[in-house]
Image (tube, rainbow, N blue to C red; front, side, top):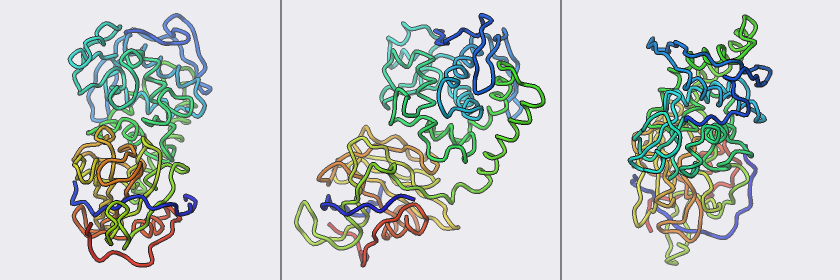
Length: 396
């Protein structure tokens, strides 16, 4: 639960939107008979190949190069505080899903990427490398992202991560230990296909047990015990979890819901949401699991996102307004999870400074708004002052 923060100066007015290598970066090359401790597991020799099978029954063979990239991911994780066996498995699942553990260039968007050691050429937007990270989303430069070790560090994230605090790595996802493995991978990757990652869980498990020691019955038992908390968490219907839309400690509430004087026009109007002042570029988080129904930029609203959720058996939409055009990181139709990084705080459209205008609309995208502070408080996501009266309509 976030702490109540004092009200500051008024910020802006907004209506309810109708919205809308083969370069190996190992510290010790595992194929050279070296070993490296990984959270009490040790990386050993990399085999020439490994046949694996996905959860949906598809079998294929990974070659030595792909397995060496896997060893890089494991080795990098072993040096980061907070990265356990589950976190390493999630990273492997993500890289398997995104690139099949191949270091991919993208010469169509970045011709220079072909000058770096690689395992082939990709063509997904401006994505690069093992985890298909995008320079335009702030993950790093082309040179950095063509380094497998750098990509692994970026995926794991945390305060020592090269991309901290945004885009978020695994350690930057609130409550990741209580989430399903695939959910965590999706929260980092922000993919248009969020259900793909779990398909590679048995593949990641086989890679871990093959490339590391301690893979007898004891290790298998440990893996089952650790994974069970993620399975249980997923079964708990994470769709009912609500989180605050900005990271704790990054914001100050500057306007509440209801009647007010527009700070730009000076007219009496109705404020359809709450304003949360935050530094330009602060990450915006999805308040709950849902589907993106609006992700666009226009002159009035600036960059805005709307997500529809199913909570307590009912549809409710949340709106996020004032991002810069480049600060929108989801697309219409994307499935998102609670706490997922969806955009960056900006000051576009009808705005007087960097902040998030946040709305809640029971019934869906185009329904009438209610007080977001009360809604967040009711769902144990905040401790905010609530408006004493609510709006009767939306007008400038």
